[in-house]
Image 1: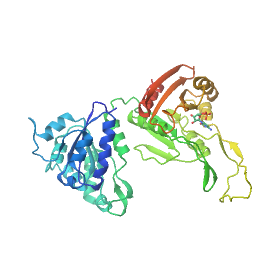
Image 2: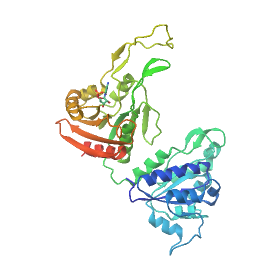
Image 3: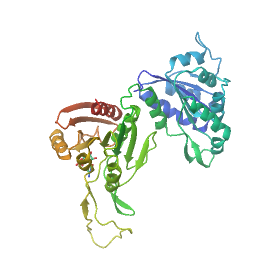
Image 4: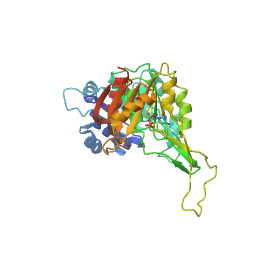
Length: 391
Ligand code: C5P
């Protein structure tokens, strides 16, 4: 999605500056060209050389580093498709909100007429400062895209709001802004992800090896294509869209069912356990002298089958993870489940599927027409799946 795009990163002097090294790599990995400018104070926190090595480009700091025919703040503006200020300090936020141009970074922001993302990071008291909030509001009201800081452990040793948001959030925001394919704008999509957790007692559970990566890739892709996304997952995820965390198949059934016929599409990417423990033990089960114990399992509801039967207006998409006879099993499964599309992937292959960042899938519609998506990153496969479902 970021191939051939130029991203101009502005680093100001927050301790989170070190995290931006990884953000540069994320953009580079996605094929973007990265230019970096730093405020003079940020050089105390992370070196120019580090960012030059990672971005594979010269890093600019001073207003008068003029090398070419135009002053840098103008030539970098021309070149970049988007500017990302991260971390954005209280000082830099307040200066740019008031049109101050006292270094290369603030001058560039002043001259930049394309999208700007601001990811603030600072001490909680600074974050709560009335003037900082007023300045940030002013920027938000003027179409700057703000990635709000999160609550957590701060470098100053305290716990509170002010920690730089997840890099993933900044990355997703960038793709969402630059992605001209807003095919899913106005669509509501719910995606389940992860393996359900079926508790045995307060400390033990039955689950599976699903990493949830394909579900998250679908949710990211749908968000990047402009959809209103809800991710229903069995793990914690900080995302720029709604995430509901739960554990068991029963909880997932309740959560997912409420969206049926109220959203445009539900994608069941979660690996829902087929069985749950019959008698959950409120107390931790004790080891006994027996060499064997028995735990009785009862069948979980088949959420995909149920929502497919009850859906009138929502497109329902299921997944089929098979270790043998992939397409034969997939054809039987789509009939049995009654869903609109089924994504089949081969989990016997080590290079794709579980925990991998890549996948290779077949997509079947309810007439058993089959399309093959060759091995690719899960995010690219996710885009192709969504394109197909909403073609
Ligand atoms: O039957 P099987 O587990 O192979 O089907 C996989 C598909 O069905 C996935 O989309 C999964 O999310 C969904 N599923 C479900 N409820 C279950 C088991 C699987 O919705 N109890």
